[in-house]
Each structure stands twice: as structure tokens, then as C-alpha cells.
Length: 192
Image (cartoon, rainbow, N blue to C red; front, side):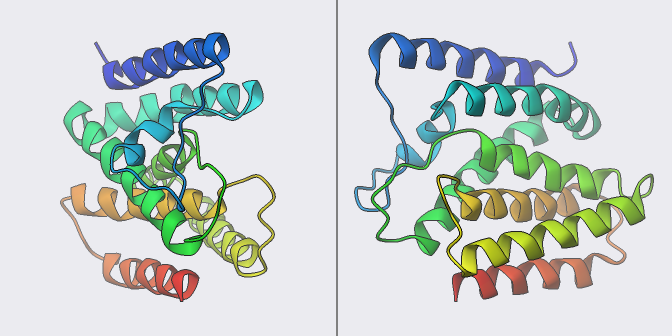
């Protein structure tokens, strides 16, 4: 069955959201009160019905295709690494924040970054321009602290590591050195 991990994530997140609605419990990543397990658990809780619906729609739409392209095992690795890395970037950029980071968004943006690399031949110009715009815009939002209630740092962290992981999965590595250095430079600029 194709997309089985995508469907498993969908199901677990759906069940957690039902639990969240019934109990009122919201577990997230809080930089001022860190626990190791929160670097995974935060992804399954969502701040609102809209947040939940958008993340699950994106997971089904984008996740299915990337899982089919790279395989379930690599997709599972992508989930854990992007989720943890997105959380780490959030904590590094907002170390004293006293608000929760919740949702699958870091992983969803990791899927977007992975898709940009995976389908680069088919949509090269569109994806490259989209990626550059997204990275620039998000760095702007983070730098000027235009955060609102959205974890832009987690989104950016997921996006960047998703792209880097997909580069590692690819057998051909031509042209990736420049892209990788750009990603690392962007991370450095955001953190510093």
C-alpha cells in the first residue's frame, strides 16, 4: 500500500486531536520548559481546528507523493529528523519564549523542501523561485519579530532540513553544493 506512513500520521494526529478536544490537553514545545519527548509530541497537537485541518490536508496532498517517490523508510526518517530539527530551530531562535510550539507544520514544510528537491527537474524554475522567496520572506518575518501566533522558525527549520535530507537521498549530487551552502548560510543568518 502506497503512502502508508502518511496515512498512519494522519490517523494518529486525528486521534490526538479528538483526545485534545475531549480533554482540553495541549502539549507542545516550550523553550522555557523543555523536555526531550516534547521534540516529537508537539507535532501531534494543534492550536485550533483550522491549524489541524490545514496541516492534515497538506500532509495528505504533499506527503503521499513524496513518500511514494522516496519510499516509506526514508519518509519515516524525514518525519523524525524534520520534526526534531524544526523544534530545535524554534528553541534556538526563541530561547526565552513562553509559548507553545505545536503542530505538524515543521514536518509539512520539510515535505515541501523535500518535494522541491525531489521534483526539481520537472518544476525547476517554479520551485527554485518559490524556495528563495519563502526563505527570504521567513527570514524577514523572524528578523523583524513579526511572529504573531505562528512558529516561522520551526517552519523554516523543517523546510531547510527537508531539502537537505532529500539532497542526501538523491544519487546525483551535481549542483547541490551551492544549494547546500545557501541553506547553511541561511540557517546561520537566522540563528545569529
